[in-house]
Length: 316
Image 1: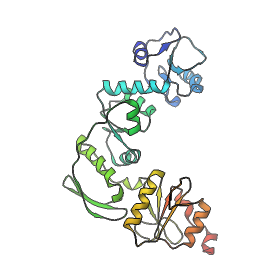
Image 2: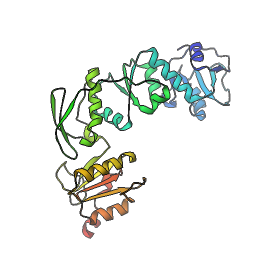
Image 3: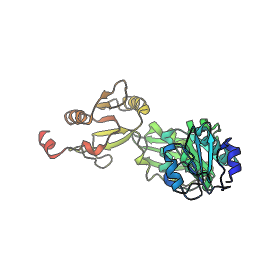
Image 4: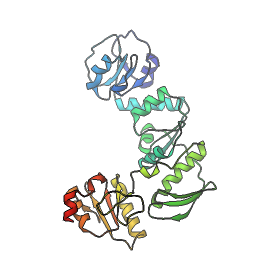
């Protein structure tokens, strides 16, 4: 991209008299800089290293030391707005479809889709680099990012998904005349999977359920007598981990409604949730080792640390 185009696009002020006239690529990542790149300095302490790495230009805000007048120093009012302007320009000029989905669904998409035709981004920086250097046709991004970019999400037509049989952590369903038996996703979140299947159908994307069980939401761990993880379904003692505090209340209500017969416990260590006990790992072990329960819904922690040591085996 040539220098004059960059200046016009981001409304930047050139504060040096550079000998260069174009850039090989654009990046905000100091570790990705190659000779000839334009560096967007979200962190101005990295500017010196960027120049040493071969940057031909620096976009910055506020005051900074002009250390090499032969490269392009471009001052802008708002560095984050500048980043948005560049991303928006590339998306529109390259006619790329962008679909907004929430973060849990974005994480599920990363596990489900096995296609290089769809690109999944959570942040501006990684999106900018890809937009400049890769031939993209479809982007999935968080809803808040599209709002910041002032872009509309592409609307995807939906096909029916009919649940045939369901358990707490598995769902059998029919979609597009195909029967999917006991997929490792709870009916609680089948709406998120449904949205991704609609995207796949509309864009003819290849997908696989092989890694879906790694999704970090409402994820069940079946435990043996020593609280070590065992095979799915091989224990009546289950710890369910959730990495997103905002989903805990929904999951709490789901368990209360769909497993009224079960002994249930609810724990959190950083969120304040009605019906949830506050805990640290030591206290959690003590409670679980001594309690009779079927399901313990917990804010995420390292499940391997729940296993009993030799000394704890003797005590309990």
